[in-house]
Length: 258
Image (cartoon, rainbow, N blue to C red):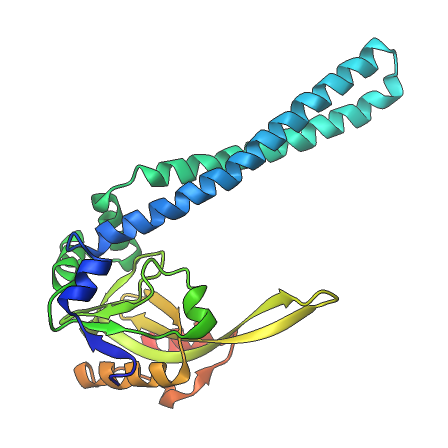
């Protein structure tokens, strides 16, 4: 297990949580991503507005030259760029809003997504940098590099588990009903055609119906199952078997008795 999990130490805490708060660090990570998004979407907005003004200019030229048969094409061009500008503007608004959010906002978001009181999220945040917290290294290689998590590692504190996904979900270990492997697929472009790739994830299901998922290696996932079973023997692991893609919802309903 030591290959995948290690105890929290001062060096790790200072590097990843210098203020002593998981959510303060998460807010900084998400802000950095939002700034990148602002730049990318900003380019789209500028391009769309340029196209819109160009389309308006061309349409006015058609009107001045009496080319009524071309007005329809001009209006279509204007409409296309207007829609792109509108959609890009909406996305840009949300990115800008994210840059203004503070730790307290992410505490509220986590509480909402976790379906727990904010006091529980605060309790997790206080426990996170304690010396008895386990750092969960579930991914390796390219999966670790490409992870969308706010921190590359999850955390298992005295009472809570946190997989560091963008949703910032926190679960009470005593509330976990299931911890299972599940399969998912995605496609990559190989040049001539798309190739279907299978990925392995581990999913946690809490008694309040909340689920949280992280990419994992098989060995790390098995180690996490064993670690959680030590703390909550009632957790269902599906005997370590992988739940097929598309069957996870049925499995979730089964373990929740719904």
